[in-house]
Image (cartoon, rainbow, N blue to C red; front, top):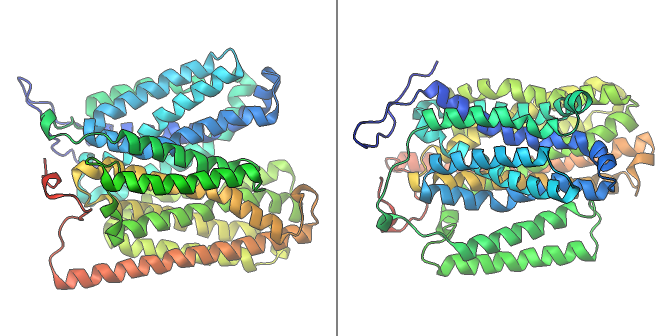
Length: 498
């Protein structure tokens, strides 16, 4: 059990009571579990919701899309806002917003009311996801950061895995509204724990607070929304609308860079990307997320069409990967604390390359075993990578940048997931030489999967090359000088440690 550590005390007539690390971690775990659960739980209700509201499947898909778009477009901005206003304060607001929006989802009288409530729920989820990781450094000792990151990774995996099955049970027993109202008791408990046990924010004079970049925030949100819609609309078939959205995203990136280079209080300091360690971690996170999503895109078709498994068995086999990820998260974090984040980042990527190569090379004649063993290797290695990469990034970040950096980590992962659903799905269909995967021959499906994971192995190999390069640079720096806190290009007046 982790020993409590002294938190920042704010004098308001009497010193605040020192928070309990154990209960603070319980709050952070709930803050990671709840958004992850709602990422997948609504999928189970789409057929029921389409029937209830007499809507098309394309219309009810916006129940999922509105939530994901809100998270993707706002996660960096809310992270930065937490750095300015106080992470604990904003996290509490995010928990309240998520819980209230869940109530609105549960009582929604129309489909579009439900979609709007889901967007609000996504904003609350963005706050929770961005600031949960940012709060780790203020909650646990530095030597326990890896274990905590592993624990949070486990909670994320549990939420994603539990969502579809829990959603199905709630709908069958209590109706579709229950899949949203289940968040209410969790949200109340989380709010009480966070308010009581998370370290109190440091209070700074208003004159010392950085301003908020409204223009940059708006442009970044619109740019990310355009990219996300381009990747999700059309399901991998790029038409005129998709290309227009991608073009808008490219223009948005150029405009965002220009704004950030000229504003006095940028949302993201462009000098951050001159730090090779941070840039490498963000790039690796994007590549790895792209590959992990491929297992969810390709796996169901391979198991059902190439191996001929029934629906129940497909679901059981698909649960192997998330289950392994959930079980290995905490042990992976402890290994990171013991052996070092950069070494374990490399080890995790090596394991993922091996798993992807196995999926690409093992013939379909090996059956379920030939699929499950490589998937177990890939997802266990992914858990190790996640714990190590998050630890490497967040350990030495300056306090006034933790929120925005945590948001950027989450954003890189989300962009990888969104990109994979479109691009890797298109690669799979192209390699299978078919326009309709549902009617393709088993041999064609097997060829498509092998090709997709051969490309996935190449992507992970690129990430591995980046990791090895970062490790060598760090080793040279360790030999030449004493390591200082990571310099993210902050200007001299912003380098004060509160």
